[in-house]
Figure 1 (cartoon, rainbow, N blue to C red):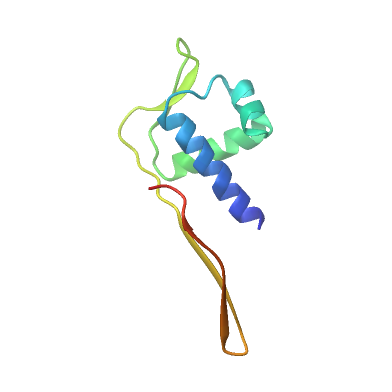
Figure 2 (cartoon, rainbow, N blue to C red):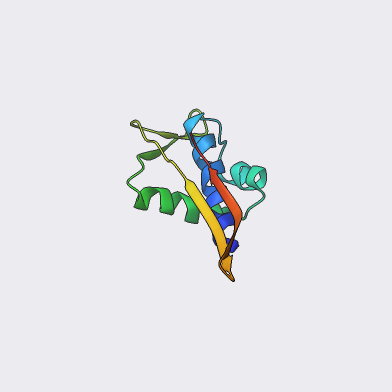
Length: 94
């Protein structure tokens, strides 16, 4: 379930960047209840997805320098004795 938590944190970071209200890295880490290192790691994941993440020193916020959309869809089900149990299904970002 650690991977799901990472995706949830990535979603939260994306929404904060999209609304341009992250604050500086230390404040962002506190807001997200993560270490600064974890926030930087999540930023690297976004950059791996070619997200145009930039930081404004004057506004003290991360932002996207160009349009960027991130859409999560997760489904988790278990099949046991030919019976399917849906544990989680959802779209994180619409």
